[in-house]
Image (cartoon, rainbow, N blue to C red; front, side):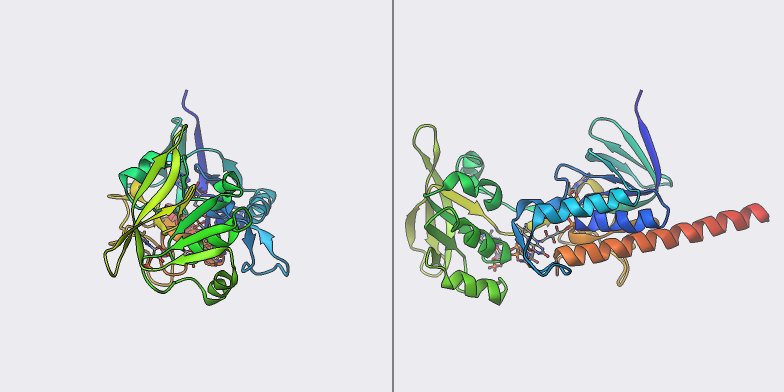
Length: 323
Ligand code: FAD
Ligand code: NAP
């Protein structure tokens, strides 16, 4: 028989947004259920040093922060489910969602905190060499390239942090960027330019990743100069794609309004989506800030919005019964 779990507040996602919503929801007595998805703890599980999350004088580790957040949410009464939602019905309340093993979840309110996923360049050669030298996570895979030559593709905070991180393992890191200036924060840029192990490849885009050897692995990256069109070859053993993320919203398309870039649309200043009783927080609705602290902040907002929604709905039910 299919298991069913019901709650006043169902939360999708266990990154900073989902877990903050869980802490607030639990403390409001809503006994939230958090469906964690395939990346329990979210994106910060893939990083090391976090030094901009308030409350910690010393540098902390991303995975540690997320373990603490989960422990805090559980401590105040949130329930974690190791499952991924594959089907949703938000046409009526309670909302009905189905996990990939067939487990059914119903929620009087739904908080969507499914975050964002790594973007890839979309090259055939990238697909062929994923896991064979091509990766989107330096902190996960950098160790495998100890003493080898590596490259990072991108010009944002992630790319710069990954390049800096990789210098722990490699003395030869190239940062490939398609323009001649970075969009990463200035403090990160200063660290990057001060690091002698990192070389910049400005105005370069990847034409293809080239495999070789036995077993096959990445041996070089063919580059094209975005100004002159000139082709060149960079010999590397590891290539880390760090060109941003896209929101995890395919599941909601056709059910909840999305913007042109696929992010969940929310009413300004709130976490209200196009469906009353469904709230969205964190990177899945925020393409401007995309920080752990903003995700946590909007997670708090979503729980408060859901709590107020339930209070108003309960009031209406009681008022109708009294008529
Ligand atoms: P995410 O952290 O992306 O979590 C999404 C959650 O949704 C995951 O648990 C996933 O399993 C779940 N999920 C997805 N689909 C489903 C589904 N169908 N069913 C159930 N669950 C689902 N920010 C900082 O402030 N400081 C930093 O130092 C910093 N470093 C970073 C380093 C890296 C390498 C990266 C990639 C990001 C970094 N960020 C940093 C950004 C920060 O990680 C994000 O802004 C933040 O994690 C967003 O939180 P979130 O909860 O919205 O989503
Ligand atoms: P991002 O800021 O969107 O930067 C993506 C980078 O990849 C840009 O430099 C972009 O180039 C490049 N790019 C995009 N598509 C490309 C393509 N097809 N080919 C080549 N290059 C491409 O993404 P992010 O660096 O992953 O950061 C995401 C969010 O997380 C940001 O808000 C960031 O501040 C946050 N974050 C914060 C920290 C921190 O606070 N320490 C750390 C990591 C991430 P252009 O510049 O030319 O557009």
